[in-house]
Amino acid sequence: MRDYLLTLCVTAAVTYLLTGPVRKFAIATGAMPEIRARDVHREPTPRLGGIAMFFGLCAGLLVADHLQNLNSVFELSNEPRALLSGAALIWLIGVLDDKFELDALIKLGAQMISAGVMVIQGLTILWLPIPGVGTVALTRGQGTLLTVALVVLTINAVNFVDGLDGLAAGMVCIAAAAFFLYAYRLWYGYTIEAAAPATLFAAILMGMCLGFLPHNMHPARIFMGDSGSMLIGLILAASAISITGQVDPDVLRLFEGSTREATHAALPVFIPLVLPLTIIAIPMADLVLAIVRRTWNGQSPFAADRGHLHHRLLEIGHSHSRAVLIMYFWSALFAFGTLSYSVHSTSMWIVLGVVFLSAIGLVLLLLPRFSPRAPRWAESFLPPRYRRRRAVAGVSAESADSTGLTSPVSASMEEPPTERVPVPAGVNGSTAIGHRSRFTDRRKAGTPS
Image (cartoon, rainbow, N blue to C red; front, side):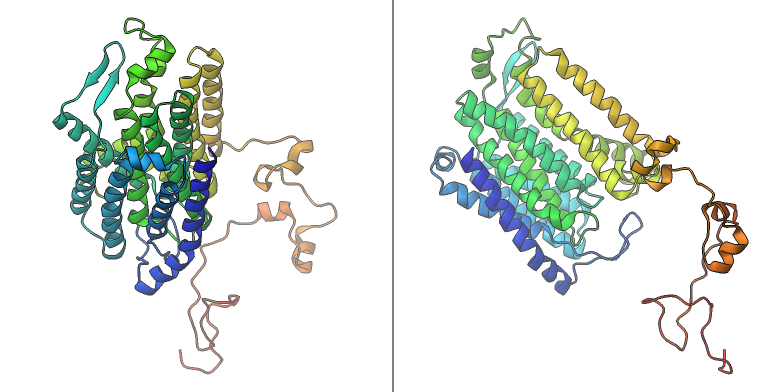
């Protein structure tokens, strides 16, 4: 665990320290696209944050290669090299897209090629554990197709959810944390060496996200862009493929004492297949809904719009930060709920806890739909929007106007403010900076209009 934590910290430090220079580089090269109709930020923000994340990945792999307990991962398996090859290719395509806006089909082809590069070097699904049937061996063609499909789906799921500041990095970090705990349990608890590469990938992925998040939280100073979102999506898929396709579930069955006939008793055996799917459950649901919505409207499945889950959270009244936290909550509930169930599958308290937390999540989700009135004694602990308006004794509307004070009652009885008329930049200077004048035109008397 100490070596994994060291690798995580080095990856996070390199990513964090490089993000600042990368931001300056993005501004200098003009990687600051104009604000589009589907964007929620108001100012042009530089992209190319994936550059810092990629060098963080390289630093993490380099450090792990020189650690005594992790060096065996590189000696006994070719998966780290396969991951680095596929990550380098998808990262390069992402950098070009952040700068030049590549076509969606070109990016899709690059994703498939990146997955194929990893398959050629041995990072592929070899068998599948199916409940009630057991272990099903896959042919080379079946394993290749399934691996490519999982990589492409995961990359696009993460890319689709990257719409708010800190959303994609935070959700992937939560997913990687849950995946790391499960993979480490297989490697250290069951002494299954085949789970070591997936454990390392998850630790490095956590470091990349944690190092980038301080620069990407609202208001974001830099975006990861497609160079970052496709990169972390590919690493997440590689972790899932490594532990799903390489770890033989029959080895776990020896420890659990399950049989094929008792599928319910063998459920923990099949968690390596279920856990990667639950980790990307929310991004995958967003991806499926986006494809159905765009196809139903006669648009291309790759056409951008403002119908994603995070956009809908903003539309129903959530703030930017609260929408991100809600998405974090549901991601953590899916990932760690599945992780807990894999450890204690017979405990009913886990199911009840997940149901209880889901109810809390639904209440938080629907909170903007109503404005509850809190008791008087609790108003001091709540935001102003939930407090009752009180009349200020001895202060009337007329006296408030004369003294410059406005009571809450008079403010609520006033007419709603009309739409503000843009103030032109007159002869006295621009109005973009500084206080605006009370007048719509500040030209001096006698000057021509």
